Length: 214
Length: 157
Image 1: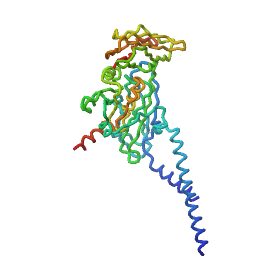
Image 2 (image 1 turned 135 degrees about the vertical axis):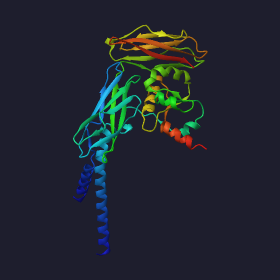
Image 3 (image 1 turned 90 degrees about the vertical axis):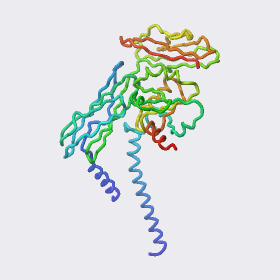
Image 4 (image 1 turned 180 degrees about the vertical axis):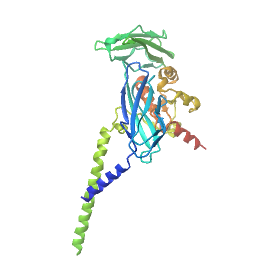
């Protein structure tokens, strides 16, 4: 019984130290469209304390992000938000980033806002690099191309930047494609880039695959 | 109170203390386990993305053979200052920088990726992409990143 009283007292003590800013959520998940170059997330909050709260700094964890509060000072009961913009160019898959918010609130000086952005990969090439060693026997190597939406994904004519490699795009019976590449000569180092033009839902794009003899 | 009674009394006291300590541990363990499984920011061991092993600068410096340092910070940070010989390859300029990285990489080379400090995630993300997209397995993340490297330079004689 005494033990229970101690635990309850500790829990009650924890409640007294509650931060003034109450966040609607500190963990947001966004889904983006193919080709989307920017995502915007908004973290709403309210000052539930009895004093004004000043936001001292808003510090994103990545140079790909910009974050700012609507204003600096929030009166008791006042609501606000932190708006976060994420540049998506170059990123694929799941992007997880955070924003550190510092305030002058003594009981909850710091808050960490987490943002997870799912960036769709309509065409996954795995791997994107094929390597042969100098002196090896010339043999064909291939890589797998997985297409998320086969009905709206169309590949164009592939091009290789070097005549030292021969590349073929082969549709697979189970869906997707296989890119088969064969080097002409493995007696000396060589490298090339294979260009795969692809139209996804009407948008022309380019995928690159790298091949090398080293 | 005679000796056997005193012994029984202290044994009962110890038993009671252990029982209370057990209850306290259990009370702490239940929310800890729940947080470990369900919390959105649970530790890395329970996330779906595999963590690339970290390696200290002292170890990297001593590694024999080929090594390629990769700077996963922003282009601006790289232009300001970087580890000598490091190669810029951030996710934001991935497609643009990848061909030159492939040119520089040699089979058997160990790749060490760094970003700003312990809290940054860019080095893990870049290292994962190097493994997944290029199939390079000898990829590591510099423990403590650029910050740790700066500290290591200050302690040099």
